[in-house]
Length: 615
Image (cartoon, rainbow, N blue to C red):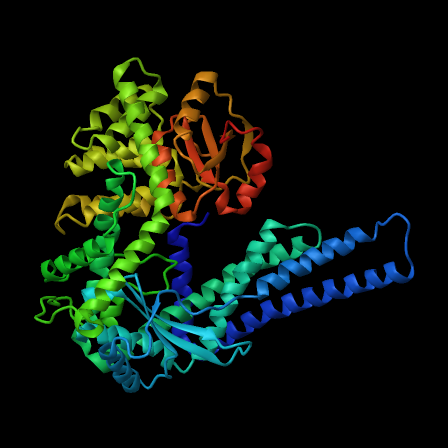
């Protein structure tokens, strides 16, 4: 698995190529898109032609043993996979579609901005529950050149921004409508979605004649994604320029800053606080929308300056939006922006109080209904964890694996207790447990023990490269709260330089070249593992294999492979917690079958019988 460092370096080279010759770059991208359609069209014609020849042969010169049905079925399967990948169903965006006469003030404001930008007319205005805005292009009927345009505005966005700032956001989205390369961009977007669907379909059923196509699209999908990614980022700058022309520099800049700060607050404070209530109640909160609105209002009042850590934030290399610092520089907006504004949020004035309340209640109900199954499962798991914690407290005679589990449970369920001594004791029993080193390192950093904390983080990342992005993200979250002159800033930079480029990749997620053997765990160790996994309803099955990989500093190393039966979001939330609870006599990496990487496809036949299976 390539590191973010490698991805960013490659994107930088492509961006330089675009800046040097935009026209040539777009021609190159168009030819690259045409190559995919050419290969797919040739594959469809070839499979259909050969299948028809075989069918005619079967009709007019029948054979007794029926062998000819096998290639017909294989060719038909290949054609079905490719045809399905080409069929993309476009529907209007989800949310509350404003009816005629509804929210006239918002409609008038949107129409004013549309005319100022010179964008195409809208076919619908949608309010959804996201802190975001979007320009949605939906093909009309079967026409690839004729489209319906929708503007999507999030209710939280209207509750955060004032009218001037909101005008800049709306103008930004109309900038996407107005862009002269709109049709070309829409075609590129649809193509990128289609190629990933082709790759996904072939990855699931790579048999016979499909293998060559799989190899081609495995390379092609990534290549096309990266080249179109550069175009998408450049279009964001063009849309920002449209917003600046309509709303002015300051509202455009402050809107970007407010949305970035509010998004950070939602991700790091609001939603974690909501999830923590699962400790006490078995059902999701009812009025989450009203709570979010109050929090956004507080954020608007409290944030008066642009914090330095926000400018230093490095965007995800897979995010098509440029970093905030780059966008502010393109707007020629200074870093001394003041966020104090006498204007109120735009929601009440543009939507009306009654509609705001109605939408808040609707979105809260929808969120509660969607969150209920996962929430109930989480509540049951937390109850089981508390019972397990009480059992471990009652019996101080613990296995090495149970010391790790005990420390993790205390950190989760007894936040007022200092878990650092418990992790130290756990590491005395299991000195090569990567997650324990990582958790102890972060605990030490939070209480000011920088040098020892960094030592434990380094140890964790050397033991398991899979922890590198997680720990670097946790380190960034901690460092951003410190003063710019704090010594830990320099330590964090050195740590990122040492590990982000992937020097530990030899013992990370790549598994294609290593030698494998049975796990060799004894009955008591397996029992402890099964007990932890039994608390996760989404684990359908789990396998463990021992791996001998060059470059591992500690032996043995295990690969824990999970068949995850839930959503990707639930997987992202649960796997790190599960990793913290597991304890094996050595280092280990936790992988899931939902990733479907080539390495996992090679590993899957080697893992033997599952060590845990949900009945």
